[in-house]
Length: 102
Image (tube, rainbow, N blue to C red; front, side, top):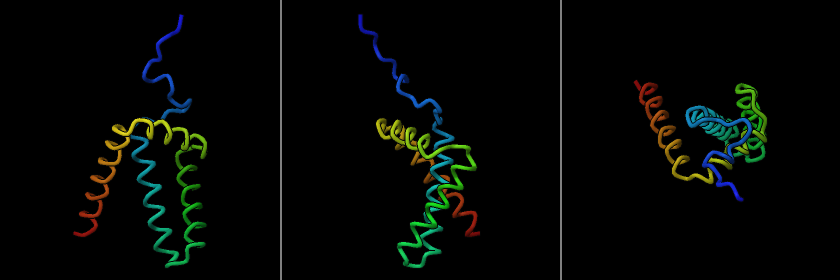
């Protein structure tokens, strides 16, 4: 007898819920933007700075690269959920930008 797969059977061992994933992705994208700005067109420097930023985000959330990657794969296989995360991420960043512009 073959068991039916439950929708959450393939969750990573350390599963990051949508809210936590949004926070982590926000920090990663902000870190990438800062790296790009600080590198001032030097692509090699940008890559190094972005990697250091990512390492700091992982450290802040007590995650490994493998754990983040497995969660990213999980959400990439669920584009509707990932899209919702990014919609909220963009909303939050827009609010931050508006507050900083005051």
